[in-house]
Length: 85
Image (cartoon, rainbow, N blue to C red):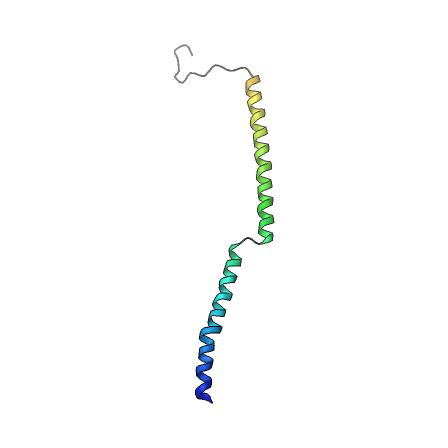
């Protein structure tokens, strides 16, 4: 009985159990490559925050440009000292 049982167990292990284990872990690795729902929500929140900050920065830049356009320009300072100073 043992003469037949050991080869049958070895064949079943080689051709059914080991490939099943390998495919099981391959599917687990593929699942880990994709984003989980919590990760997707976090990415969406970060995207919304970045867009809101971008709008705020654009608003600040436009306000600064308007204030620069409204204020009179000062003449540039000379870089070298003159004898009149």
